[in-house]
Each structure stands twice: as structure tokens, then as C-alpha cells.
Length: 314
Length: 183
Image 1: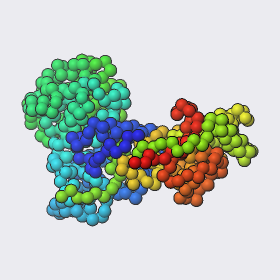
Image 2 (image 1 turned 90 degrees about the horizontal axis):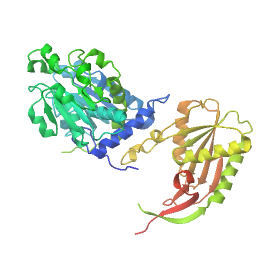
Image 3 (image 1 turned 30 degrees about the vertical axis):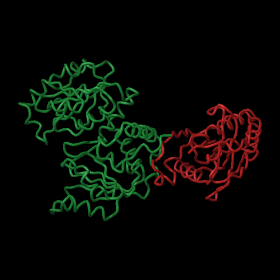
């Protein structure tokens, strides 16, 4: 029995987790995959606990997957949406969270465009904080669900080669994945135009390539990232047409990876910009499996955090 | 915590007799076996249930349904644990609705596992009845739960632990009382 490996009160980043903690989260998530095949998918594990979904940015899959995860564990859920809240009346983040805190929730799941906002919350909130994406920093549950999908395909999470392609600079998904795979000892190649893949990323233990064909060679995992127009990534290269020509993954470029390779994408897809439609819908693609696994990962995270009210750190 | 053996209370021969008696008693009490089904609680209860299933097959020639139940998500002490436990598999491939369920575990202690197991079964449907079979009853109940079939009543102290060892997983058939090593 693996006892007391998990030391976290919050889930703020992959950086905070040890390799053992990552393995444990995945192991528990795997049993939640089995649990999700049962006829009745609801369990009283978090009965009486309240989870707040605090989303300051748009989201489809992360938000609904946290919602399903919380409900399957019988927690009560409050969905907070920035656009219909008092934020519109000028309330600050701190005051908004303090107001919600006064209602004694147990877990706050936050997505915010400012990097580090989940960490900031831990300085004055007693709930367990879960980072559902903060600015350009991290998106830990995405990296964990990617890892679960990889583990299901390859039966291991070690000794693999992963290529991440696209706007690394603005991507919290990429950062979390780079950190996770570096901890697991996998080979990481980052591919994209120099403006979006600065050489500095090599300090995180990855190799940088500016040529798609060169970087993708012999990969086990090909992970595409979205061209994030809302973060202005379109300004970093001359035209979508040129980007597509150089960095779109299609049947031809994908064939340079290993035969057993899988294609991943955190979504939402820009079809025929970074990913060819026929490839996205092929049997190489595990994109929808990633979404399904998201529920199991988020159930595992909520289950491990238990919904205990914590001491304030300072 | 390190443990040492305090006493060996059953050997292979005794255990075999006790298993046969439990199987017989179940058949004696449930004359109509059409709606009878067994559910073993993870982990040891599953092996105990398998043995009872095989014995019933030997005695009466009937092959009863056997389900596997993991109660982790229904425990009442999840929030008290340092780290929530791993979750094992549940596999009940038959309907519990209107059936007579024999719930099986290796040891009954506080009764809280059985409470969780019953809650879990009721999520699946409304059984006609639930009966409880345990190999060892070690006392110290904290809930009004009493086994219908009991291999052996074994008064123990709270700090002790009863280890029902089965050849299938423990290489040996025997029942031991364990106690913490003193410093």
C-alpha cells in the first residue's frame, strides 16, 4: 500500500509534484476510469463538500470536466462565471475570492489570465486551490490527463520521446507537459518558429527545433498546440498560410514519427491550421480520449485533496 | 508498525471444515437458490467468496453468481485519512434487484465496512434480502450489524489484528492473531 506519498494541500503546478505523486495521481485516475464504466457513476466520497468553479477565462472542456468530476463524487458545485458576477461592478479578485470563502467552500478551482493567481489565492484562502490554467504559467490537470492517455497507450510513462509543436511561448499546457515529462525522464523536443519557441526553453530540459520534419522524427507522441489568436500568437509569424506550410501536422509529416505514435491536442482545434482534419479524425488521434480521461484525472485530484479546509500559509 | 504473531488460531484442516460448514449453513437457510448470489468484498472477501462458491458447486451442483465489490468510495473515514486509499475494482455482472444477496468478507470488526458495502449495493438496486457471511468475527462492533453466518468468533483486543491467510494469495492456509511489536 502506497501510503502518504501525496503531500499537497493544493494543486498549483506540476513543478510542485514529485514523480511518485504523479504516478499516484495516475494510478488513482486509472481506477476512476474503471469507476466511470459502472452503471451508476455517483459515489459519496466528497458528500457535504463544496467545490467552486471560478473561471475568469472561457473554457468548455476543463470547466465541464471539473463539474462532472465533482458531481460524480457527490460534492456540491458552484459555477462562478466572471461575465455575470460582481467583477463587472469592479470587485477585485481578492474581494471576490474572500466573498466566496465566507461561504466556506472546500475546494476552489480557478482559471485566470494572470500567471500565479492560484498561488496568490493560497495566501488568504483556506480552501484547497486547484489551478485550472493560469496565464502562461501552468495547466497541471491537462498535463496529467495527457500523461494518463500516454500511459494507457504505451503502458509506461518513461523512456518515451515526445514532440510538442506550435506556440510554446504562450502555452501553459506546454510548460506543464515539459515539466512533467522532464521529471519522468522522457525526451522532449519543442518545435515551432523561433519567435514562438525561444532557445531558453532548453533550460527546461528540452531540445528546440525550428524544422518540423527534423524534430518529429522517431517520436512516440506528437502533441500539437493551438495557435492562440486571443493571446496574439498570430503576430509572431508572417501569416497563417506560412505557419501552416511549415508547422501543420499532416499525414506526411506525421509518418516521420514512430509507427506506433499517437497524435494529441489539448483542444480546441484549429482544423487545417495546426492540424490536418483527416489526421485529427484518424485512428492515430487520441484527442477525444484525452477529454474522457480529463474527468478521471479531475476526480483523482479532488479525491486526493479531500476538501479539507487548510491553514493559511502566511 | 511492525507486527508479530501472537497466536495461530486455525490451521488448514480446521479452516476447511469451517468453510464447508458456512457453505452448508447458507444452503440450509436458503432453500430456494434460484435468486441467490454472492458478493465478496475486496480484497480478502473476494477469495473467501470464491471458496464458498466452489463448495456450493461441489455440494449442490449449482453455479452461483459471484460479484466483486470495492467499498473505498463509500467509506465513512475518507476525510480522516492522511492520504485517501487506492480504489480497487468493482465487478457485479448481475442484477441485485429482487435477489437474495450473500455479502462475504474475511473478518468483521467495527461493522463499518459492511455498512459501506450495503450502501454501495443499494446504489445498484433493491435486493430482496442481504445476508452476511464472515470467516472470523473479532468483536468490537460500532454499528448494529451482526453476521448471519460466522466461521469463528474470536475475541480480540482492539490493538490486535486478525490475519486470515489463504493459499491463493498468502501461500498458506491459516488464521493468525497479530499484535504490535513492543519497543
